[in-house]
Amino acid sequence: MNSRGEAPRVSAITVVKDGERLLADAIRSILAQTLPPAEILVVDGQSVDHTARVARSFPEVRYLLQPGQGLAAARNLGIQESQGDLIAFLDHDDLWDPRKLELQVQTMRLNPSLGYTTTWMKLLPKPREGDAVRDGCTPSALVARRELFSRIGSFDPQYAIGCDADWFTRARDHHVPTAVVPRILLYKRLHDANLSANAAVNRREMFHIAKRSIARRRGGLHGEDTAYPR
Image (tube, rainbow, N blue to C red):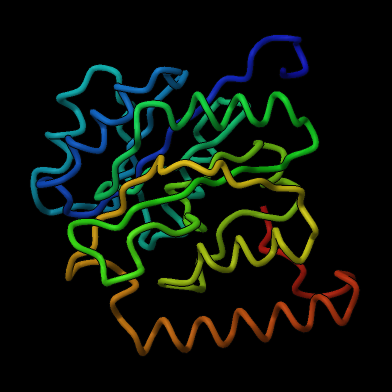
């Protein structure tokens, strides 16, 4: 329940750049939710293909052209422009199970102390052996309370790839109560264009995130570098 005693409203945010081939499938998986979101925002990182045309072909979508660059800035713009009590993300190349929002919102309504929930995810098209199902510590699996972004900060644009990992690390370091819905509710596509495929940048950013996390925990979350500013 929100402060008005009503059921929480969910904002679904999709960030995309040059994603004309897969974007429509992602949007359809949002529209197929058994608990429909209150709004769907598509944040376009200045695509040069037909991404804008695809997004605007859905009357339910509010299309936003990102003035800057970067994944973190796109996610932050979506948060700033959204109106929901709960924020859910879906990358343009991922897919939601139809019951994803229903089950996560239900979990959070039954457990008001939770700051966010995630779900299990399945990797597509053909994961490595033993890698088929895993906990989805990724924004496409996330439903978070709006106030959490005020508490621990939004996504840090200094990271080209690691802004997601940095946000989840900050949530952990701040001891934010969370839960995993133990069902496969996210299907994550693996392909050559995945940002995380850039191993050198990914390694460098993960090392920096780990250093910041250690400093936060040693400092008791007081002082410099506790969270990216709102």
